[in-house]
Image 1 (cartoon, rainbow, N blue to C red):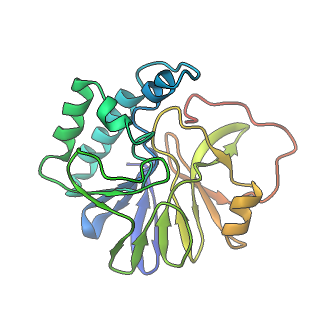
Image 2: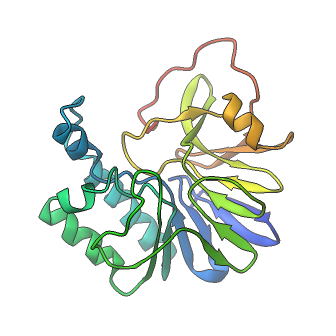
Length: 228
């Protein structure tokens, strides 16, 4: 799967090239910030129009990871929908596609700042989830935790890529959804959260670990078709 395996809080995990986190011992796939329905939400509110395929692209990526891992449990780390109405705004084929992916799996939705209330999509809804030594929540605030929210990104060979951020206390996942944008990992908000020596694990064709940059690069990175 071209992922990067590592230990965090004594647990062996794998950062997948897609931006998903795989916990083999628990048969659990964790993803963050899908922002399903973003194009519909922007159109509904009169904002910038996006190609109407972002939900399909995100669900296709998720389906591929579920098939590759054989995951029996799925944990979505918040902002799974772009706002409180986005779940109801999904086109019927997309709604059925999501339900098919959920069928037969233990599915946990962590509430985010974009989707702070449960939806009618099924599964269980929680503010946080504690599984073994790990705490899963949307926004980082503690120890031995897995979170999302910040959409971290990093540059490699001048191109921007979404990335995981990892240190001894925290693991922050990249945004999994299409067209979600990102925050540079040298941004002061992320530098303040992550300890010196933190890693950035870049997504793409292969998950690549690098020391987390804590300063802006000398030259501006180019945009990438993989950047979300």
